[in-house]
Length: 194
Image (cartoon, rainbow, N blue to C red; front, top):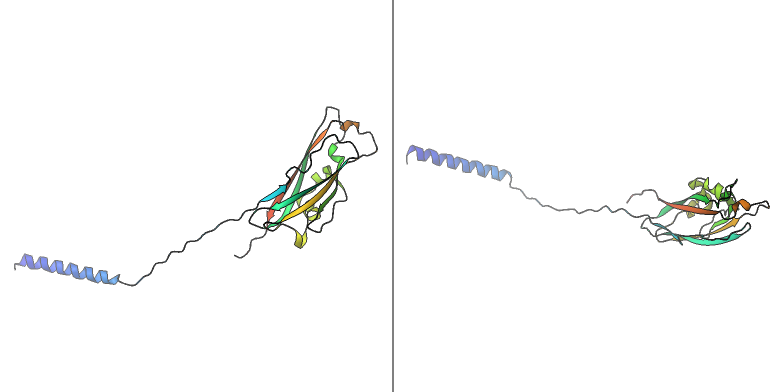
C-alpha cells in the first residue's frame, strides 16, 4: 500500500472514530408526552321576559298599571348582581308643556318576589332616572346573600305604575307619551381559584 492510500485510510478511520464518539455522546433514553390544554370563557346572558314590560295608551291621571316580568340567567356563569338604569323621553303633543311628564308617572311598587327586598313605596320615573344603578340594585332588586342570579335561575319582579292625579290642571299632558327604557346590567361574580 502506498503512502497516499495509507494516509487516506488513516483519515477515514479517524473520521469514523470521531463520529462514533460524537454519536455516542447523544445516545440516551428519552420519553416525550404532550399536554393539550383549554381555556374557555363562560358567558353572562341575562334575559328579560317579556322584553316589553308595559305598553299602554289612553292614560288619564289616576290610572294604575301592574306588570310582572322575569329576569333570567341563561348564561353559564353566575350573576353577582343586576344593575338597573332608567331612561325615558317625552314626546309632547304640541302643547307647550311647563312640566316633565316623567315627574307625574310614578313607580308605586317594585317588588322582587324571589328575594327579600324593600319594595318601593313610590318614586317617580324622573327620580328613578336620577338614581345610580347600584343604589337601585341594592335597594329594589335584592341584596346581600340573596342578590344575583345563579346560572339557570330566574327572579320574578312585580311593578306598579301610576299616572299621578295631582288634583291640579294637567291638560298640558293630553296626547303626550313617555318612552321608558330600563337597562338591566348583569355583573359577574368575583374570580375564584379553579
